[in-house]
Image (tube, rainbow, N blue to C red; front, side, top):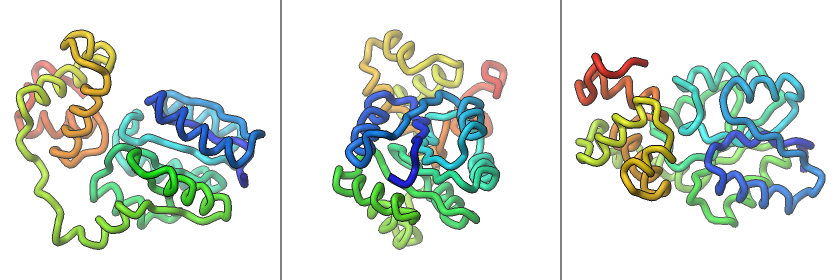
Length: 217
């Protein structure tokens, strides 16, 4: 493996464990520091910038894509592998045309495609999964309009996460599994055409989905 350390910036334990498994198949000597927020990620990069960063942008505390691009420009020896459930067209377009290329995988990519991505990164190349690549090619013909109406349940979940409740707390409060809440969260982001909670809440406030007197960003 080209990198001796891989920073796992993924707050979803099961997918972080899966990525760790694939990377360890290439080298048993890799160190896996784990970070839970942007501040911890920066601190770890200051310790060692020549590293691979596996980042789930949608679950991290970045407020806009420009912050991520600035971070990549600051730590040019690091390679960022974006590993998320779903990313918007605008987000993918911005990171695709940034000065330093990102690699992109979706969490439902096959094991074979994950191995291909790791192989490309080992050779110093960036990798974009086939689904994202195909979608970018046909974006103008197939892009769905943003701002689709949220269901009642999705609206309630958005209100709860905007109020600061964790996925676990929402699942307990609504007597649902954490997986179900994560699915609602993914659907909310897709319908609003956003990538993270900050963007979703800001959109909802701007359009009146949420009451500005109750929620503050």
